[in-house]
Image: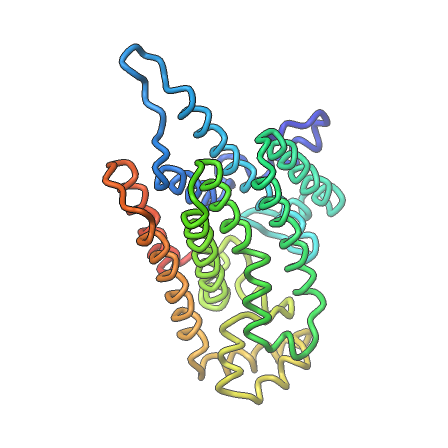
Length: 321
């Protein structure tokens, strides 16, 4: 899907799809499990060796959603790295660092355009609208992060809305798209959406924790990267609730490294990390509840996939990278 006519553009677009730096493939994994969890079985040969054509076509269309989702995700990473002036990603040099900002932006644009072409091929207006909304949300979330007022930077509600736009919208709407392609009811589609939304929020909250507690080697990027870029995340927001004087430091900004040290000192004395983990657990539990609320189905493949989706809610909150 990312083949380009210009070799340099092809190399840039494929940069984070190569073996070894392709990432965790978290989103495609969730979506393919969701497809089977919603009673869509992996096509098996019939007795005469011919596969069920309708099942095969549906599975192919749902796999296309997983591929589109990953392309949108990688495109957003390429653009974010340019905006953040990042020099590493997934343990290697970021694309903008290796090939320059212009090519990184173009590679991200190319991936989005290829995602749009693949999306149009599905010929499903509702699914196209869902994924188009995701791209809008990514831009909105990034803009919210760049243009915050003092009150907004210190607001947990604002932070969670921004986090939904930047992180959870993609997986929640993609899960809903999987359900819609399967012809599921509106109620089941909402449960799929709720699973993706809460799993995505839990994932990002743990990311926020790891930015303070992880190391560059385990994260594949510099730890403390958010606060050094002036981005205030859940642990600091929770610490601010306990120590209101921390707000003065936040408002001064973190260009001065001494303010980073002061903020970390307050964070260490607070329950900011613990409260962020607790909020992540809350969202993980909501994701699990959505799976438990799906209509009963005794099919072995469906049961296994639902169990795997439940297992992911646990893995998301216990991971260390």
